Structures are given as structure tokens and as C-alpha cells.
Length: 106
Image 1: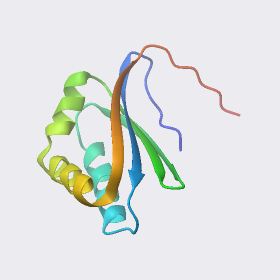
Image 2 (image 1 turned 180 degrees about the horizontal axis):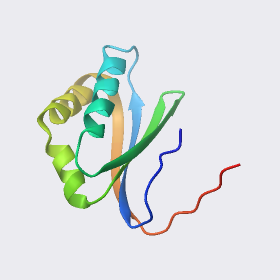
Image 3 (image 1 turned 135 degrees about the vertical axis):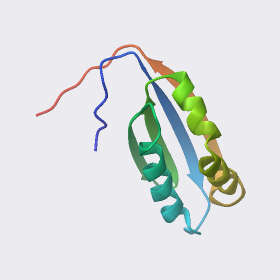
Image 4 (image 1 turned 30 degrees about the horizontal axis):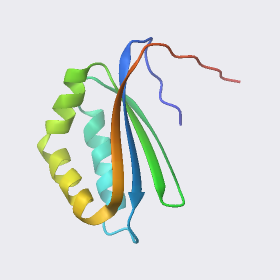
């Protein structure tokens, strides 16, 4: 599903990852992080796709302060550390300011 975001400006956090083999609790943790993110002030939405081990998740936020608060959220921080140790062979996070957005819906 495509996230419904407001008119720009807002921010996007792009998380690209390569997974290790097996689930090892990943699915449950990912669902919990989505639930928790939705409760965070400034959260606007999320889009995610995974194919052949490569995952890309884009979360949208009202401000850089909201992104920082999410990064510092205790449960999210603990799951991130577990991800480094267990679920990911590599990942990269990019933070972008969305200045323009275009849409089409049929």
C-alpha cells in the first residue's frame, strides 16, 4: 500500500537491508516496530518491499525531531541492535527531506 502523506515538506527515512537466512523472530519484531512507529508523534506512514533478500522500507515523518525521537525510542533501539547481530548482513539508512511529491491514482 502506498502511504498517504501530506503536502511537502516532510521527511523520509529510507532503510535498505540485506537479510540473513531464516526468520529468527524477524517477522514478529517487524510487526511490533510498525505498531510502535504508528504511535510516535510525527509519524506519517510507511511503505515496504522485499525481494531476493533485499528489503527497502521508507518511513515518513513530519520533522527531523520526530525521526530522532523514533531513533532514540528504547524498544526500537533494542530491536535495531538485535537486527545488527541477527537479522541483517548489511543495511543502510538515508534521511531525506521531501520537497515535492506527485501522485497518480486510477
